[in-house]
Image 1 (cartoon, helix red, strand yellow):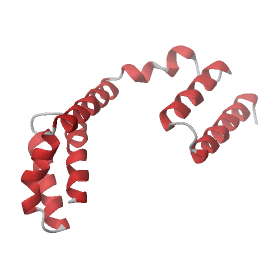
Image 2 (tube, helix red, strand yellow):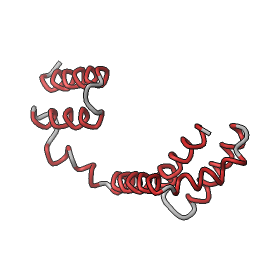
Image 3 (cartoon, rainbow, N blue to C red):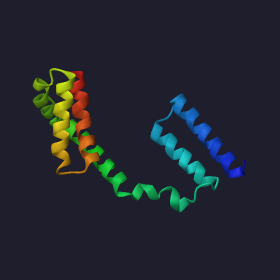
Image 4 (tube, helix red, strand yellow):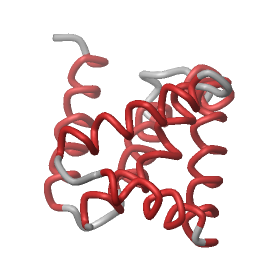
Length: 127
């Protein structure tokens, strides 16, 4: 084994242990692992954080903020309440969510539609 392989395996084991211990948030542990890889020289610094500028990452981040905002304003409750009467069985609930996701996906990114419908699905699951 080379030194780089030993370093990566060590960082990986420490990261897995930190995930299992669950003392810190998962995103913090992941960023610490990435930073550790840069500090020890296994991953080049300019390459390590280049993924954060990818359009998909930015889209997901923006949609999650928008989804949280819609949940705080009560818009998610309105959609869930409209779907709740028809959601008398798991099959009907899945069909309604699928139809709504298909409609939304016609006008926006699939990941965005999924992120917006996740709180609705959670709300319907608790009804």
